[in-house]
Image (tube, rainbow, N blue to C red):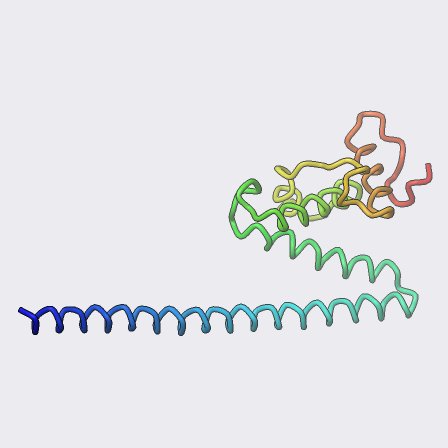
Length: 158
């Protein structure tokens, strides 16, 4: 009887030990994969920013804006990962709320970007996510949503 309990205990220890080793290995592998994805994303961000800055430094403001908007629109398409807005983590929701402000003031040419942003609320200019510049854009966005919009959205001074 004692021998059987000893073997059963040893078996349980081995099973639990195997589980723990498997968990640690899988967790480390997942962490490494996540870090590699972050590295690739960071490299892409640096490349995009250098391209936009180069366009700005050489006087091609419209090209720089287009480059940044194209990158932002790709992020808007990618961020939800087929999840409903309400199911996204709060950081992703905040990013989409900020994008909604910009894309309401300066509508995207792509219908899929507009449809991705459709369920996202348009926050006010005094919201704590808004920098001074974004608050100006938010006012333009809210004017565009109101029936008496009077600005073309590009300068916000009218």
